[in-house]
Length: 465
Image 1 (cartoon, rainbow, N blue to C red):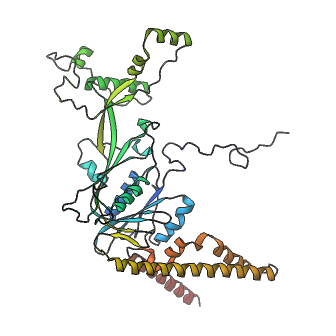
Image 2 (cartoon, rainbow, N blue to C red; image 1 turned 90 degrees about the vertical axis):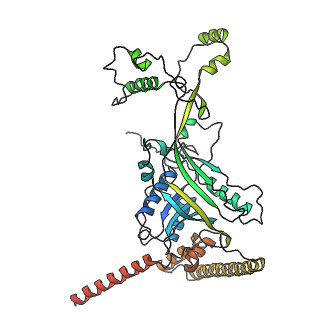
Image 3 (cartoon, one colour; image 1 turned 90 degrees about the horizontal axis):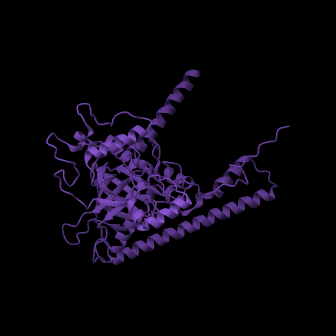
């Protein structure tokens, strides 16, 4: 009789590694994960919807790229699922009643939340139309981008400035936590394919209290430096012939008598062209030295010993160093973000900073007392809920476990993780959404649809009778 199969990959006792390497185009387990969401999916418009899709591409691969919002979805629906799905950040696009486009960046599960007003933006398709040779659509999005922040901190800023120093540090920390950290010593250069640039605009007036960021997204392309364009095309053609797909990319030499005519680059015989002799100015600032990672023939022990005797070790290392020119091509989108408010919680809680509203020390103390009173009331509610659960347990034990299934369901609902402070905050309608979207036209439309369905059902019942 054949031996029964023992599953060793997915069952108990499987010898699986704790941290498996992520698949190509997927994020690792410990990497930050985000959701880019449109709050009020039917009200933001087609342009903002496309902007949300473009931002999802920027956040690849650690984002929900195929997320579909519904009209009935509320913010608390997404917050409830952040824990089971391991989502660390929420990027919320919305449109206010006055027509302003807003972006909120919230850190789960307890905040803080940065509020931005999108003053200007350009979609990816608009950026591509403005370029002569647009790029993109390849393997750029299988790895996260490299985040570069410029001029975020203002020299001389302190806690009493209109834009305090701790706010600048908080903004830096929130944006850094959006993407996985990299180690310059161990990270391969080929894995860095994109750059996300955040540049803070300098204040027009000294300490005017504005915090404006310019959002840019670029792709990184490299090519050998000091090599002429004809030779680069021949090198690309050689790689093309070694590949399976050989369509295009081969230079046309049909009208030339010899390969030297192609390399010389003209009937006058101007000679071999490089970047230095082609008439263009050399720009060494955009050139870097990288270690060549091409496969090399493995030498035997005797051959290695003979090579070490004849050549110096440094000469061997220098042969593998290659100079390459770095080019940045913008992918989009572009955004100009003005920070308007910072909240302590997840789209709720105390206001830590506001661009236009400044309170005195006495008003801040009164707000602190009010928040402390709310916290005490919340603690009292939690104690009361816990006492009710214990009381039901004792009644169930006294009755000998004769309660019906409905009581069990009630206990399960009360014993799950929904008694946390966060869930209580999100369930309060007046504090759930600081944009005032809890009672917008979207919710009214959903209620109207429910009423219409109930009227249709009543007409059907009347016809049957």
